[in-house]
Length: 305
Length: 305
Ligand SMILES: Nc1ncnc2c1ncn2[C@@H]1O[C@H](COP(=O)(O)O)[C@@H](O)[C@H]1O
Ligand SMILES: Nc1ncnc2c1ncn2[C@@H]1O[C@H](COP(=O)(O)O)[C@@H](O)[C@H]1O
Ligand SMILES: [Zn+2]
Ligand SMILES: [Zn+2]
Image (cartoon, rainbow over all chains, first blue to last red; front, side, top):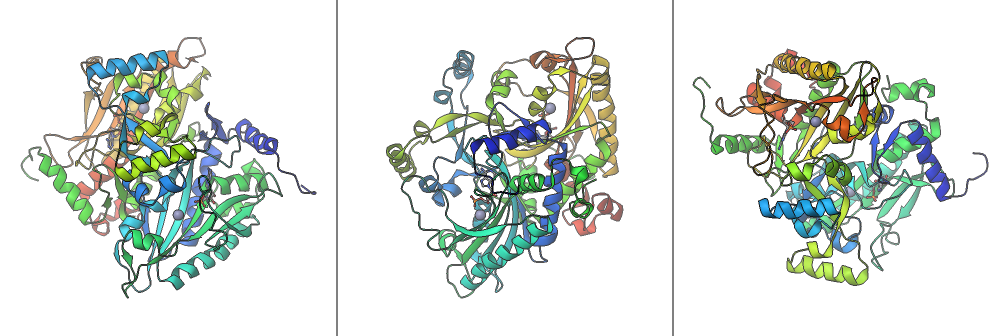
């Protein structure tokens, strides 16, 4: 692309078409819900290993969690206030034989099934780090604690833009400690993530951002420069895609989950999150859809067969 | 254990306590929903690689899918008939500002949230292979097709038995082809899986089984010997745990999804499924909770650091 390409919905949908034609992604009848084929899976696995080598240290705690977590955690974190439209709640059938017949009638006639179901105590994780904070309750060591977590996340935002999926994988490093540690973690990771992406042949710019709060909401984040994103042009130079975010939460979670620094104060936290599929989509856009034609050094770096 | 240990709920719960104390699993307030710690994660990754080396061939198709799939697929496969009590459906908030206030009131007062939500078009995958069948529509090659899929699965069966989780990972190999191919796939994998487990130091017995159909249901499977399980005693010699199942579906899915062998007949399918966490739990019970004390050959086989 020599001249900047303007953003159009067609550019994103055209990219999705190419990905489907190449069987990198396989479609369902639902936009944003895709199976990943062989090559895409290889890339996800290679990227996962590369982030591990780059991001983990001796003292990093490792957590891997299910795609569902207790609804009580998400309620406590105020997700229903901030992003009610994005959350996937879980509901299930708890009736007996009679209720089962009624449920099956509804299924057969295409009627609404919800009256036959009950709300469950789990939701689909909207981000990976929600699992981490409850496990940090208590007094932290002097150097704070860093956790490495990777989760399937769900956000209810159907789209034909392949960079906007309903179900996607997020890799996060979460630090809890003093304000200096948490801010340092956020800022150093902005640089480190840019370097990491550069090694993959991806050029990312940094910009302050805020989360898409529901309704009028609090558009304060960018003004307070709590959140930064790393942006890469995937289908458009004028509308680049956020492939990673670096978020400083002050003592919000420290208070909520009684996480304390050794001096007894509420800990400060930062999470940095990689959108795994988005980085893979950036790689494919940058280096082409044929993995066999990628630079040898990059193929080796990602452990591609 | 020299004499057979009788099955008691206490034996399973005692094992869960040991796993939590060793931080192999980390608790939430919900039985069956756990985070996996460092060591458990290493084992899951090592097991995943071992199954890949053992089970994949040149021609195996690879699919990796989200934990949610279209509800229409699960309806089509009759899951609401057979296991309505196990299925996790998804519901979400689709209202505006006024409805949001009502939702928040309900959250704050602990009232039922379901009246504020709508049923969504995805469910949590109850098994991995449901994702595969729609992609097999059409005419198969002469040798049939084998797909390697791994998914987070959800089954609504809360339990303090650590072998019975609500969210767990299933690795499946699915074959579609002629009746001879599908039956041969089922039978050869029963032997191959036993050999695979034996190399891990696990001794598995084979038994016909049937799925836990809801209500009176169809208890025909075991009589027809469609399904076999590989069982390992984990906390009890008299009540061993199924760590893998091998399921022959005749032409059920072949008809449903219009999968045809070259002669035009509906294809027959078989899926073999490994319960990843259950195998790891069997390894821990067999070799102990301290990975550093495991036999060197086994540690190398699983790529443990
Ligand atoms: N709908 C989505 N589809 C794919 N990736 C996403 C989606 N939403 C967020 N991400 C990725 O996850 C990262 C962290 O998300 P956020 O918590 O919104 O900052 C983003 O920088 C994206 O890379
Ligand atoms: N609730 C569960 N928790 C953990 N693993 C399970 C659970 N249900 C099934 N599995 C595993 O998944 C395999 C296939 O399940 P099935 O489709 O029920 O035969 C079983 O053999 C188990 O190893
Ligand atoms: Zn986060
Ligand atoms: Zn299956």
